[in-house]
Length: 472
Image (cartoon, rainbow, N blue to C red; front, side):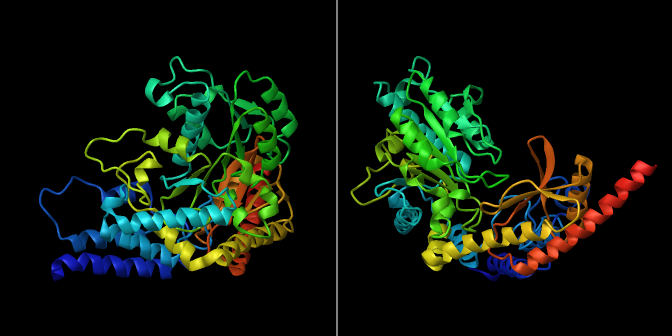
């Protein structure tokens, strides 16, 4: 490699390290507006080639001018967005440098084996049934799609229908059941699979957002064919966990397939102290979660688990083109387990993180985030005019400021504008709220305390502005 070829790589490395090491004090949130970013990064495509180093410098400048919020930093709490473990970042750099298609064993044997090992480790870590098949799609939407496709294959296959060959036009009916608080990615997967999101039979939830088993029993009794039941562990707002063990036992009596949306909540199963919260989760038929959330690996990496590998494989790839080699015993071709053919080795950072953390390290990461969330709740509850809207179950807490939605939104805007920390808004049972999500390995007690101080200041300022508005 010549110096000219190496120069952009060296510069990118320096900029990346500087960015990561500066995250603790870097402003949280974008400071550059749309017009500024377009001016910086846009314009006509160059007519002639430009030096690669200049391009990398420009990207670095965009970050320095606030074009990219420090979402992987220790005080970004707006979404369930993990940080990035150094070992996972390093592994991801190698994935890009090696540029091996992680679809077939014969294209990348080492990556194929590492992915298989990572899958086995995760099955064991979560306490899922031995022999459960694993895939690494882009995220939870594709993990849901994969799992629900396997469910469709299994349930229709039981009734003599080959859905992969004949489609859904004349297929027997499959009903889909989900709680009223189910995540939109379930609906997306159902749309992509041809079920339609509008046909979901919705089960009422309790005040915490958990599916009511008595109401599920009523819906199941009304089904004329074995359905798919979608349970949830870790509501994206409240962190609420459906009584998944009871749901599995009840649904299976009706011949249903139970799929679990565990986007971040499934990681509770990796913690001995939190495992009782998801008791019975291992009795489901499929699960979806994200590694780029609580495992803190780079985007993007979802994970899907299915207890019936034959249905899983058939739903993804039941015929091979002539140019594809046959899978030999012991080899693992990723195209058998996820929708995409051409794909990067997104499972390698997962393998690296799991090997480095070990079971104890994963449990500590999850436990620390939950403890920090409780610290948030305790301190926020002491602020006058603050209302906590949920019990802290995992790593989520919602707060409301005063009786007026406008005040809550004003507080959120002021906190975001501070650059010190970042929280997002949500709506919980028709009321505006601020959502706190603690997912990053970098977050400390000091980060919580600093953030609460900013919130206190924003609450006081918003309350003063509201008094002025009413007086005027």
